[in-house]
Structure formats: C-alpha cells, structure tokens
Image (cartoon, rainbow over all chains, first blue to last red):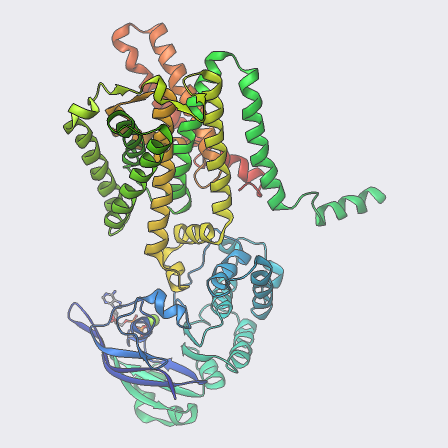
Length: 237
Length: 337
Ligand SMILES: Nc1ncnc2c1ncn2[C@@H]1O[C@H](COP(=O)(O)OP(=O)(O)O)[C@@H](O)[C@H]1O
Ligand SMILES: [Mg+2]
C-alpha cells in the first residue's frame, strides 16, 4: 500500500532537467532514505512531493488521491510535514511559539491542549529546557531539532526531511537516529541524507538519485553492494 | 534569607499572568483617556478626540503592516471609502445617521475585498505600488464626481445629521466620548485579535511566509482577511471622522493620508497594540508644534517649513528608535502585547 507515489515526475528549470521521469513508490510505514550526489535533484524531487516546487510533468498520488495540482498548504493539511534543507524557523519567535504554530494548525482546541502537545514534542527533540528562548538565539543544531519538532507537532502521516542531520553534533545525530526509530512506529518517513551512518542505521529502504533519475533502489545492504552506486556516489566521497 | 526565598518564589510565580497584565494595561489606558478629558484644557481635549479617531486608523494599518508584514501605500482609500460612504449617504439619500454609518463601513469592506483580491496577487514593492495606484484612482474618482463630492473643497455634514442615539456629536463632550468608545472597541478588538490563533498566524506569515505555508496555513486567505480587517478599521475611522467633525473632503483621499498611518505606526511601534496610539499622539503634536514654530520664527512664505522640522525629528527617531516607542518599551518589558 503506497502512501505516496509518482508517475513520470519531471522538473525542467529553463532547460536544465533537474528531475526526469521518476516513478516512485513509498509504502506506508516505511523509513525511506533518498540519497545521491549534490545536484542530483533530491531537493527538487521532494519539493514536488510537498508542492513547494511546481512539477513540469507527471503526477503525484498521496493517500490514493491525485494531488498534482494541489497547492502546498493543502497537501500539508492532508497529513504531510516538511523540513527545509536550509533551516527555516520563525527566528524572532520563542521556541514554544514555533512549535505551537505547527501544533495549532492541526489541534483546533483550547490553548492548554496545544501547550501539552508542545511540551511533549519539545521533550522528544531535547529542547524542553529551552522553551522560552528566542529561536534565532539557538545554536544551529538546536534550530534543526526545533524544525524537526515543528514537523512532529503536526503528527504527520508522511514526514519529509531534507538533510536533517546536516550541522548536528555526533551526539545529536545519535539522538536523531533514535527519534526516527520511535517516530517510524506511526509515521512514514522520507529522508534526504548524506550521512551514510544515519542512512544505514535508520532507513529500511534506499532510493538513489543521480542526474535526476533513479539509479538504484534497495535495502541498505543491497545498495552498499551495488557497483554503479559505488562509482556514482559512495566512491566519490 | 527569608527575603531571598520570597523573591525566588516571586520570580517563579509573577503576581499577574501575562494575559491579565495585558488586559490591565489596555483597560488602564482607556480609563486614563476617560479621565484625561476632565483634566486637559479644552484645546487639548479637542485635539485628543481627533487623535483617537486617527489612532483607530493607525490600528487598522497596524493589523496589516505591523502584524502581517504587508506595507500598503493606499490606506487613504479605505479611510475615504468610510468617510464618503457615510457622507454621501447622509447627503444624498435620506437615511438616518446609523444607516449611513453602516453604509460607510460596508463601502470600506467592499473596497478592501476588491483591493485585497487584486493587490495580493503581488508582493513586496509591487504590492506597495498597486495599493498606491488604487488609492490614487480613488482620489481621482472623488475629484471626478466633484458635482457630488465638491472635490477638494469638500462638504459639511449638517448638524442635524450628526445626532446618534439622541447625542449631538457636534457638542465637544459627546464627541470626545463617542471617539473614545470607538477607540476602546477597536483597541480591545485588535488586542484580542493578535492574541487569537488567527493573529498569531499573521505574525508567523510576517516572520517567515514560506515556513508558515509549509506548516499548512493558507497564506493568501489569511492575508486577504487581514486586508479586510485592516480596511474595515480604517473605514470606521473615516466614518467617525466625518460624523464627529462634520466634514468630508478630497484631501482625506490623497496620498498623505496613506503615508500618515504608516508614520504613526512606525513611530509608535509596528506590531504592538499600543504603538498606534503613541505614534498618533506624537505625530499629531509634532506637526502641531513645528507649524507653530515655523509660523513664529519664519515669515509666512516659509510657514510650510513645519514639514521640514517634522521630517528632521522623524529621521532622528528612526535612527535612534527604529522599533518605535512601544518597541523601546517592549525591550524593557517583554510581556507587552
Ligand atoms: N530554482 C532553481 N533554478 C534553476 N536551477 C535549479 C533550481 N533549483 C535547483 N536547480 C538545479 O537543479 C539541480 C538539482 O538541484 P537540487 O534538487 O537542489 O539537488 P540536490 O538536492 O540533490 O542537491 C541542480 O543542478 C541545481 O543547480
Ligand atoms: Mg538538496
């Protein structure tokens, strides 16, 4: 049962074919890693899933509905959450308000219910003691965790994360892997990731993108053993 | 020792929660304005009635600029829609004042829906230009229909048309308290709005529109509602101005009435509930004072030098208090709404 899938999805940036003709299926409940060298089209691809980037052709199906023409905010209300490759939080607002803004869209209830959700999310992303801080004053790693927290607060069906561990310390990365493990019990996760340690530990299945096309798909072990992936990506590290 | 523990407990549990402090502040300001009428000399209480109406205009502007982050250069259009909707209705259709007031408010709402839908197709500088163009079109329309509007000269609203629920609003006390009631309603309304989930979403859009969209908020819908609320409050100020001061004229549709609310809000503090009032008081007296100065020390040809004096003060303020007065206050007391 695919939660999200694409048929012939393509993106052309004024002559540059960033993503070409991608057929993709992500089953419900899976943790999928999307890997590939810089410029392979990963951000563009997930941008078209989330609606942030308009596709040039092809279709996107989410929860059995064709969402190709839906604007991004409607896709989010259908149960997606998205974190940006370049950290994007409300930097002048408090840590609490950042997460509350995410929670309030989903929980149409009293402030006390929203606050309870915010508190539980901040504990999960190790930011409970920074409740009142201004988001822009947090360290880079903590801002990344905050953005992940904003995604959690929406209790999404599909959580798309674009290079979430970039800039995290080694212990924060360990915490992140643990977070993904817990989260994957009731959320489908699509993860763009450069850290192969995270990919091997967290992902059930891997899709490799190269020059805008799917180069290979398989389990972590299969991908590790794949010769063309080695040359295209792993070898070039 | 016992003092120490006491202050520690005081720190953990402030005497009043943030919410009740905010309510106290707003109620306190309205009570202060009530008492001021009796304390001030007639000249200043007369000014204050005008200031309160203009502060409503500024509060309307603040919803869009201060909270949503949209800089309009066309708010004179909303003010004038209220003013002329009311003024023309009372002049040319035989309606009682309350009906004319409703017509004035509705005109402002209709105009802001139309302007909102069209102008929100653009962002940034283009939004500024489009709103400016709409307001200029409104100004020219007022001049074009000079037969009814009497153009720049304007028209007076008859005293008998300025009676509301038996109160003659051309009388100073009635006028002041009518202005204060309107001010208080709009003041509490905006304070409630910015604490509501809708208001907090507007702030999110101001701070990071792309992030807010990717949290699932419908940005265009929120912005359009913000334009309508902003336009309605500005229109209410326009209605009140004509009703209380008995005059409608094209100068209120001109570009300086689009710039003024921007200055009020910038000076007082954008994105604060008390900023618009502070900014309006300050700006009003700044213009008043500098025109006195200009006419006292310069020959009459240079009387308009007051604009120069006012301008210099404004530049100094933006240099030294870029967040406005309320912004300065807020950096001291974080709970200020
Ligand atoms: N807005 C854009 N306009 C033009 N080209 C773009 C744009 N965004 C990305 N690209 C190009 O598309 C290709 C894929 O980019 P991207 O999806 O960001 O790759 P990845 O995330 O895998 O590093 C790159 O060659 C990049 O330069
Ligand atoms: Mg990328």
